[in-house]
Image (cartoon, rainbow, N blue to C red):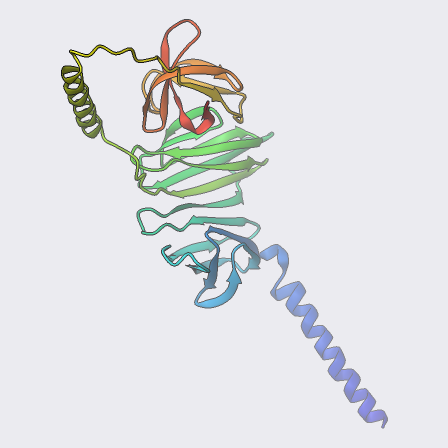
Length: 297
């Protein structure tokens, strides 16, 4: 009887030692990285071909490269699946965000990795590294344009920022990030085509058609004068992260900044191009503001 008890105790002790060894030495949490995945619409998750439920998803993984596949669920049968490789680093958070469109070119997203770095100067500073597909996109941090992707910004003061990437012909992508002391945010953006984008040649042709149509109507109605009331079109500046919105000389983010307008202010506009509004400023001059932060009245 005593031998059986001793035998059982030995088995129990061996099991406890195995569990402790696995948790504290083999699978130590401090040697793993966190993986977080979000998608729109909701999607089933497969990591290295293993089904792991649906988005949103978060778990810890050993450092290494993994293949992630997202398959739309529910009624979103027109949305395409996405598959890509991600790398999990120790002591880091890898954040994958995907918007699944009805084709590859209409799908976009970003992957953010937050990692420690020894290449930053001492003090309350961090950094951000930005790449994009396709490359050559305009990168903005906060309210400032920083350059063209790929780009690496070091010695950025700690705090919360809005990171934006924009390329003409593609939908602008924006993500809030937090710069922490001694860490770099690696941001990889995948841009999707903007279905509403029109080239300069297309806009010129549209204007020519409108002018021809207007001229034809004018000729038809020349014998019957009519009075057309002037309708004032207005917008109001909505909430921004900085409390103001830049006014630019031309309807694009790379154009020269000529003024700033504050949130809550109302302005008359007389033209809209690619979601940019041409407004009349208080001094009577005109400039362009992005439609991302305005509402029509």
